[in-house]
Amino acid sequence: MLGHWTDLVKAGEGLRASTDQDAEAWRASIPEVIRLQSITFALAELDRIDVPDRGLARDRASIGVEEASSRLDELWSGVPMPEALLDIASDASSALERAVYAGLRWIRWRGPGRFEVPEIDLELAGRAGTLACAQPGTILLPGEPVAWWTEREPPRELVGEAFDVEPGPAVQVYRRLDESGRAIGDLVAPLADLPVGLPILVPIAVDGVAIGRFTVTRARWLEANRLAFEGVEADYPIRYEPGASPDAGD
Image 1 (cartoon, one colour):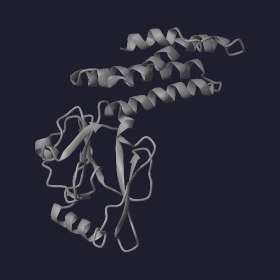
Image 2: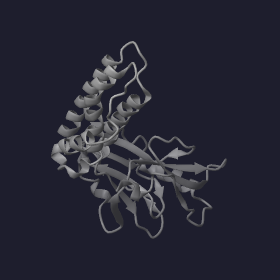
Image 3: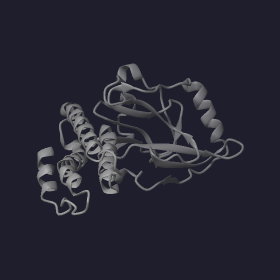
């Protein structure tokens, strides 16, 4: 896959060396630009690779980005690196960060009615791959993401006809509460955004590394959630920020 994108980038029209005083640095930078852009494009299609091979692909991409970025730093040592090259290196680093979410799938409560998240056995679920999941006892509305995962099996407690499974981006669900603690709205946002609200999804593992756990008993959290929904008769609409809807994961 990387070779395919390398050939395409080499054929591009935007890789001509500058004729100004930095021409030599520009010419020497072209192989690294090709390498970085090829890695960026290839990582965007990482979900086409079989799951067992993705980790190795990410490792190779990480080495490539580090080597190419270091070479650019050497070539432009002592002078400001052009903004275009900084952007290309930044794009490659960002693509590498997103690559752990390749092939991500959402679990959404289909409804009808509100969903009270059951106990989730994280020991049984294991630490492989990437997983974020709502704290047991959380109350969610129809259509809301209960969890998302990739490169692993989903929690068995969230599998069945009551749930929809579909591609989607890595997101957080933020619950807005009024001054009395009553739920008044939910917002689904990309991970990079930090809107006001109570985060609902707990990050459990990223690329096989355990990074979080449930910290409240289900009974206690369910009681708090039921109190938040007291007097909330109708289900309020769920808002999605740009880039946070399920079709953004296609």
